[in-house]
Picture 1 (cartoon, rainbow, N blue to C red):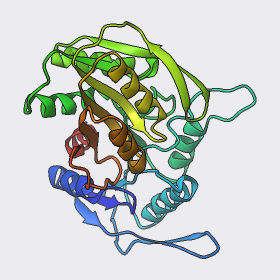
Picture 2 (picture 1 turned 30 degrees about the horizontal axis):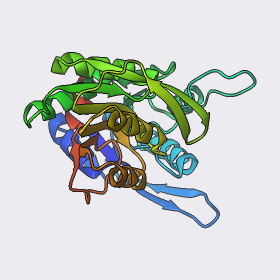
Picture 3 (picture 1 turned 60 degrees about the horizontal axis):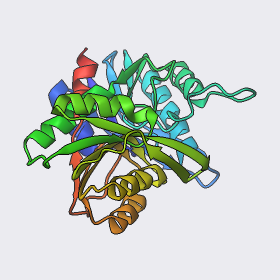
Length: 293
């Protein structure tokens, strides 16, 4: 088995996964040309070996998506056997709903990945249970990682789990059950991109609050969750998110709410590790377990 770490995949994730899977890491060179096309070069012969290509679909999303298709095509042409496309962060995951007169980019993206030569597609904690994705590493697995971290560090007294919106309720419920805590959620309305409002489903709040969501991008949803938690009396806030996309947004939120004591995220995307309160959880074990399965 061979593993290719794409340019946007966290190398520590790929490296640890390769050790656990007994896979050889193969280098892949991606060169973006001035005319916005790309050149892919893989100096390896696969001789029908199974191949895992690990790549996160971050910005610039369309360019990186096209590069992923080209990498898969190159691997196939170089004699690969079964190809597993492991996409820790699936950039199109939030566009998974059918809108009258519109496309469903999440489904189309998976079809194109399969058409390029991938035998299966595996993603971590997509926005919802997206139709068309063959394997989704369930939110419960991420909750298990959070639990394992929290039980090895002091858990705040009288903590409660908060979901920033109804879509994150399954995540909050799973984490609350694992930690034997209660949970609440915010009834969120989004009037325009980046502008959210709403109220907490129940007025009860404890001194400590664990907020869990899948993505921090613009930061508006997490900001509003922190606002509500502090408004209702939380003095200690732990933020948990699978995909920390916007580093600047989380820095802004931290500056606004000194009650934030910890931020837990994963290496699904490359992370700057310059924040004292940030802990990056390694998900290579989840990845390896799903590939073996």
